[in-house]
Structure formats: structure tokens, C-alpha cells
Image: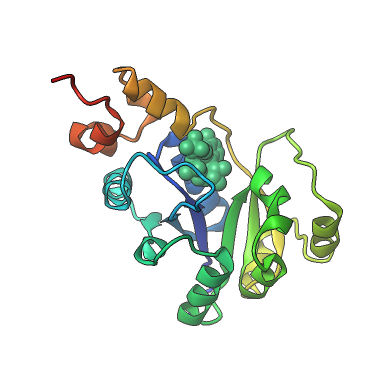
Length: 216
Ligand code: ATP
């Protein structure tokens, strides 16, 4: 069985942009892992994505074409309503045997982990890779700090020897790009060419969900 880890990077990807791709790519390099981008159904308290699930998948496919380090896993979109990460990881664990799984989380999302459904169980199924920016420290609540104390490892090689349960920091390159900003630019008729992956920009039909409808 391969011990090359499988890492999961979730998000709305409305649309996917170079900020997502850069951190996913660097995490894949640092972990020597296969990274899967996993688009989420959006929970009721968050704004509805402008692009439909099918449109977000089409954009992800275009963005990921031509390389094999990053892949798409659209399983959560096939379910009704939002998915709990713990359920997705349990399902992956069932499929992947003892292969190391790594849940990739931005430092801010990691700090909010105690608000997640059955968050302590996440460690039963996967490691967590915290995507950090050099010099930036999110405040980690006490309950999380206690849970993580014995799990923290500095050397990513430690993630290969067990299927899950460890936490490590992955220093990645921060890019000040957000999907919100890209949606604003497109709605204003601007062309955010270099904030988007080429596969996406080269097919203007993929970006139609973000353009203001022409006046008739
Ligand atoms: P929005 O602006 O619509 O909130 P977003 O650009 O933050 O979207 P999401 O799809 O919500 O994108 O993010 C998916 C994951 O990517 C999240 O973990 C988020 O923290 C991370 N992420 C988003 N933008 C960046 C970026 N520029 N650099 C690093 N990570 C990012």
C-alpha cells in the first residue's frame, strides 16, 4: 500500500483562483502528497455561490488540466445539503485503508476548529496540515491547544508513518487574492486575467456566472 499521503483541500471555489492553486501546489510539494480539491456544498448560513455546483466543477476541471499533482474530488457536491468534514474523512478512510490522510486548513480555519461538528474525531481519520503564512499567528483557543499539544510534529516525514492524528504546519506563499475580489472585478466588466488559472481564463464561457447580464 502506498504511504504517499492523500491531502484534502476544501472550499467553495467560486471561482477557483491562483491563491488556492498556489497553496495546494506547495502543500503537495511539502508533503509529497496527492492533493484533492474538494468543492463544498455551501451551508445555509453562508451566501449562495454565484456559480452552480456544475459550473464550479467545470472551472476546477479547466484549472487543473495539464498536471497530475492536484486532482478534483467532487463527492460532497453529490450529497444533499452541506457535508460535515468528519463524515467525508471517515468515508475516505474507508476507501484508502491505512494511507495517511491530511486535511489542509488555513491557519484561521484551524483556529476555529472547536466550532466544527465532532471536531475531535477528525484526528481519528486524518492528520491536519495547517497552511501558515510566515510571521502570521492565529490565536489558537485553549481546547484546541490542549488537543494538539501531543499531536504536533515539526517534520512532515512523521505523517507518513501513521494514517492520521498528527498536526503540522506547512509554510506556504501567501497571495492576497480572494474569490470575492475576482467576482467584484468580473461583475464590473474587468478582466482579472492573472488572478485566474489560464485554463479558466481562456474559456470565457466558464466565467459567465460572474458577468453582469447584458441589458436587453
Ligand atoms: P471567498 O472570497 O468567496 O470567501 P475564497 O477566495 O476565500 O472565497 P474559498 O473557496 O472560500 O475561497 O477558500 C477555500 C480555501 O482556500 C479556504 O481554506 C481558504 O482559506 C483558502 N484560500 C482562499 N484564498 C486564499 C489565498 N489567497 N491564499 C491561501 N489560501 C486561500
